[in-house]
Structure formats: C-alpha cells, structure tokens
Image (cartoon, rainbow over all chains, first blue to last red; front, top):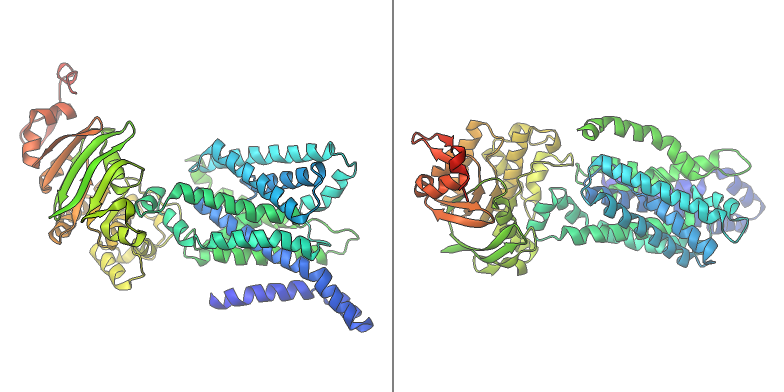
Length: 318
Length: 242
C-alpha cells in the first residue's frame, strides 16, 4: 500500500510527461532547449492538470458518496460537473470573463448551485433511486441550459469553441490555467482529506456520529462546498469528465477496508491514475484533431457503471 | 453517586421538558407505546439532536465536552441496524475507540462471540449478527452511560438472555444503562423502569410495581393475566387509555 502511494503519482507524472517519447527525441535532436520548452511549456501544465483533476474527482467523489451514504453519488451523477460547466459557460461567454481564476470561481458556483439543488430535491439521505433520478434531472437541465447559453451567446463561435473543452480536454492549457484550476482544487481536496475520520464515523450513521460530538449537517455542508470548489475549478479549465469520480472511490474503498472517509486518499490516487491513462489514450489515437477525454472515460466507465447498477439492483428495487 | 443528570431536556413536539437522574451502576428499562417518546428521550440525552435543557454526566456538561472525552462519557446505539459500507466487523468495533486498541477489540470480539465473523463486512451479516457488532462498538470505549435503543430486538433467545447478563455486568462495573425495549416480560431484569408516553415520563418505578399498576395497563391498552401473559383490553376500556 505504501509503495503504491509513493510510486503511483511518480509513475503517472513520468509517464504522462514523457509519453509519447518520439516528439521529445526529435526535438532534442534539433535543439535541447526546444525539448525543454516542449516539456515545460506544453506538457507540464497538461500533466499537472490531468493528475490534479483526477485526484480532485476521486477525492470529492469519495466524499460525496460518504456524505450521501450512497456508492452511486459522485460529481457527475449528482450534476455537479454539469453545473460547473454551465457556470463556466455563463462566465466565459455571457459575462465576458477571461481570467482563469474568475472562470474557476464561476465553475465552483455552478457546481455548488446544482449540489444545493440536489439536496433540496432529494434530501441528504435519499435512497439510490431518488438520488439518481434527482441527479439525472439536474444534469439534464444543466446540460440543456449550457447548450442554450452557448446557442444564444453573443459570440457566434461559442458553440464550436466550447465543444473543445466541454467534454474534457487538456490540450494547449497554459501554466496559468493549470494554476487557476489546481490551486483552489488542491486546497479544497486537502481540506476534504482532513475530514476522513469524521466521514468514517458518519459511515456508522449520522445519529452515531452526532452522539460522538460531530455535527453531521455542518460536515455535509463543508463536503458539498469543498467538492464544488474542487470539481468546479477543474471543470472550468478542462471541461466535465465523467465516471472517474464514480469509479475511483469504488476502488478506493477496497484499499481503505470499506471505510468511506479513509477511501478519499486512495480514491484520489486512483482518480489521478485513471485520468492519466485516459489522456494518454487520447494522445495515442492518431487523429488530426483530438477526441475529448470525457469520451474515453465514458467508453471505459459505462460498462463498469452498468455492472454497478446490476449488482445494486437488489437495493434499487427493495 | 449520580452518573447522569438531565435537566428539562426537550425536543420540539416529541419530548416535553424532562428531567431525570440516573445513579451509576443502574440498569434502567424504557418502555412505552410506539411513538411515545422512548427514542426521542435517548436521542435528546445523547445529543443527537439539538435539545433544550442540559445533560450532565459525572459532573461534566455534555455540550462542552471535547470529542475524545465524549466517548468516555456516553455512547448511543440507534434502533437502525443499517450499515451502508462493507466495513469489516472488527473495524466497526475499532471505530468505537478513540485510539486503536487491539487488546480491547479482541476482548469485545470474545465477549460477543464474534470470532467467526470478525473479518466479514458488516453489510453482509444477518440483522442479529450486525446488532451484536454494533453493540460491541457501543461498549468498546467503556462509556459511563450507555443509551441503547432496542438492543434486544431481532435477537435469538440465547442472545437476549446473554445481553441481559452483559448489561448486568456492565452495571456491576459502575456503568449506567438506559435501554429502550418492547418485550414487557424482560422488565424484571432491570433495576428501574421508565414508562414513556405522549412525549413524557408517565411513571418511574421499580419494574415489579410498574407492571401491576392500573395506569401501566391503561397506557399500553393491555391487561396482565397474572401468569406473565398480556391480553388486549376490550375496546370500551381502551377508549379511556390516555
């Protein structure tokens, strides 16, 4: 486990920075400074974003699942990612914001809005079916609102422009953009991780947690706000990427012996690994234009999600 | 010595202001009709809900006790036996402790005969097995006060009697227990019985006195037949129940 913790981020960073090797080698053959430029200016922001976004998705997914006491809660299914996309679109194409940090704030606000709506609609301890339906309704509404905002946007290129990042893209992101996403997301993720023990105790039921002196309601507000910041900031820079926040916690709990709160840390590592592989897949596909990362995670995630639904069917119909 | 002192604890519309004192080492049974307020009283005492009034345990105000101290003061077992997550039984017991303590966990596993299922995830256990694991969690930190909501439901007869022994032993070591229960025939195992209905304590007596009183029968809409059995009161009689 310790080896995994130390090695996985290092391997992810190395693999993502260096693969594919050929362009680096060619650049190095021409001029070693060119290779350095390629590595630091082009690849490093992308690598940092991929690792950070994956970790934020894993940790906030695990936190939301712990809080809702439901293994199907996650940034995408709760509508948080769609809300963040809507927030970023409104900020970018309607309010004319260009500062990455301002857009990140819009993304966080959008995610926060959808999560608040979900709680209002389904309640904090909703059963699986209610949670899924409410999340689906909110996601669909946010998706439609995003399309509408793009269709009616002052700029006629908004739709085409947004397609590039809405489904998840890490292409050509600057270090400033990476920082705008990762600094808030990183702080929020660390604050989430500090609540691991509390969320483990909430796993025994809110009443038990409250009798131990915790404040479950306050904790859930914190979890929602922190997850919204973590996911919202990343979505505003790299688009909405599905399934990682759903799947990573599932494997994270395997490593935390089932504890929902302690699963956040391994889920963050696994999220980073999953997104690294997804983005490397995108890079490896020889097309003249990049396919969105969200498409790759969906292709791999959908069968897993179906498997989860099938194994949970007993609970859904009960 | 008084272990638990509650002054005017109340929950909106469910529990009228209630004061109660429980000496250390006392085993208290809570009985009453469904919806009468047993669970509300336990929740208010455990601080699960923001109740008005004050709860003092061993001279310490529960509201101002730090988390680590709270575990030594009280523990609460809710009536629900649901656990969402696949946590091993042993780990559930460990969650009852502030610091990891393998010796204490092993002790609880032995006491509640959980050896064979200690490594199994609780969400896969039967309701009765899960109850034993959750009760072990509640006892693990050796709290001064145990607030147990229907710990004896869904248990086989062996475990009902075994738990009564365990409760008695805990009381013998100075812990105080408030136990909500439905099986009136178990009341004689307790030192003191509280009858709760309509959101307040209606009677506070030794179990033997309580069970033969007219008011007890009225509130439960039952009539004792004298041989440990109960009969439903005829409808005319039931009208005047409260």
